[in-house]
Each structure stands twice: as C-alpha cells, then as structure tokens.
Image (tube, rainbow, N blue to C red):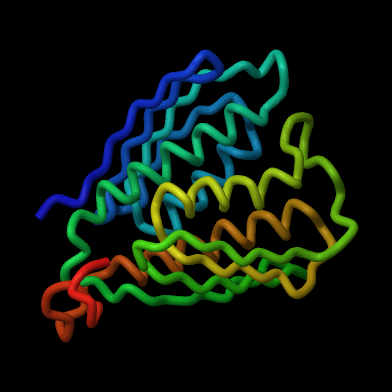
Length: 197
C-alpha cells in the first residue's frame, strides 16, 4: 500500500508543492526561500524517515509569514492524504529530544481531531537568521495540526538558544510522527473503538 501525499496549493501570496512518502528513507528536497525553515523541514523528513519534497515560491519581499504558513498548511494536507484510512497504525507516540541545553517533548495522536498544546521558554530571541520570526513556530504547528487533523502536544521545559529550542521541536515531532504512523502487527483495522479516525 502506497502512503504518499501530494498537494499543490496556490494563492495570490504563494505557490506551494508538497510531496510526502510516509514509508520513505528520509530523502529530503526542500526549497522555500527561508533558510532556517528549510533546515527545520529537512529535520522533519530526515528524522521522520519520510521522503519529503517541498517547493514554495512566496511573497518574501513582504516577509516570510505567508511562505511559512502556506507551506505548513500544504504539509498538513499532504500528511493527512498520505495516511489514507489509517488502518493498522500505532496512532499514539511520543518522543523527547535534547539538543545541547534544550529539551523538546512531543506527544501525538493521529486522532482525526485537530488540537495543539504548545509551550516554549519565555524571552526567546525574536529572530533566527534574517527571516525566521520565532513566534512562527507555534503558527507552523497550528497550521500543520489543523490540516493533518492530529492532536499534538509540544513542550520545551528549558533551553537558552533559540535555534536549539526550535530545532529540538522539529526533531521530536519527526520522531513522534514516525512512530505514530508506523504499522503495528497487533493492530487490525483502524485503532479506535469508534471504528474511524
């Protein structure tokens, strides 16, 4: 069974292409024009063992907000498409990932119901590089969760360096998603007493 999602999304602000193979090997090709965001998406593909292609052309002459937001929307849509009927998956998973002084803890439920809980240390640096506003991390997760239709809890109890704090979140998200979408030989059909996710 192929678990591949492909979404093309076009607005007056952005043109986005996302392709994801949940059963890939971590092959990543990402180009959004926002260097740090490209780096984060590469973490998601590599550590999730997803083959991930992302091509975004956005209105970066304004700022990076629309580019990042619309990419996250398309990524969520492609992820949901790739999941198919969700039969046989583990559904629940969690991961804790340290990156030097920072720790990120992520718990996920491939629930069919979008919900995000997100916390980071206060007083983070406002920018990473020239074009990544650190307040966008929560917005990326909100957009992804809403369109992937998953429940996601992300908690960073401590960390000092903004780069490390954000990157640890993407790596932990990748590992939790990798485990949640994995097939479990003990699961027959959809892993829900409702019979649907």
